Image (cartoon, rainbow, N blue to C red):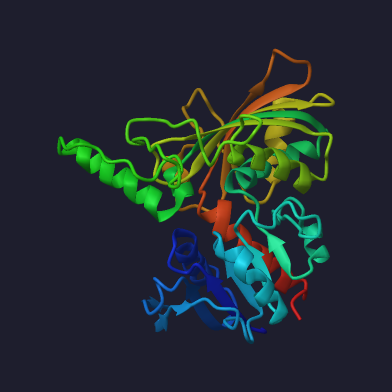
Length: 344
């Protein structure tokens, strides 16, 4: 089997670390591996699969001979993706930099793999919450076109990276010790105000937009339309940060064009790859972050009729933000390209 030269940009962050775990778990066929990060992290040694790798500072010259470049996200994507493509690599990018660019495919492999073939060097990974929601919605959309989606998210601090996860841990320890709680990261590090997340929920993820939605909320709206190739789809979102380490949960209300029964929905979801139906309220079986953290599949439950509209369903879904919401989805794109001989 052919093996590929792979680079991971952002190798020391939460998503970069998850890339390494998944490459080993899934026996991804790499020949050479290059770990890239900022100047601050350069020189760090990371042991991986019996070998020590030294993290290199990312420059425009970092991508020589690289065939697959996995970008963990952040401002570096816009800076270095053009250089990687020029060097001959396919960039699979976790940032929001290219998601809405018309020429860049925005891909969830189980949902719209056909879009990959249109790439011109860059393929975008959707927002984590969008990925988790669409894993639950795509099999239902195939039963009957969806007219409208109302989604409320309950997002783990993993969405804010290692700093967000560390802040929750620190605050819980401070509360337990009776010490004053420090808040420096959430809701957004660069904003003037920060709020305690331990014992709290924060109804803001990312910065405010002119329409009084947050950037995270508008990502879910716009990315969903692009991935499903349906500009007439109506989507509204409220995104909330909760004191959970990792794995996002979402409450999704769906209005269809035609009738979709609870039984039809369960059957379609059960057959869909990457989804596990956990839906027995009487027996208290439903998705929770506690049981989806560290897992690859998205769990769906609480499937029930919405009696306030003619063709409506409610459901609850939950998935690991760092895995399916980021690193796994990107690696699955690369695996699809390998399986279909799309990397030259």
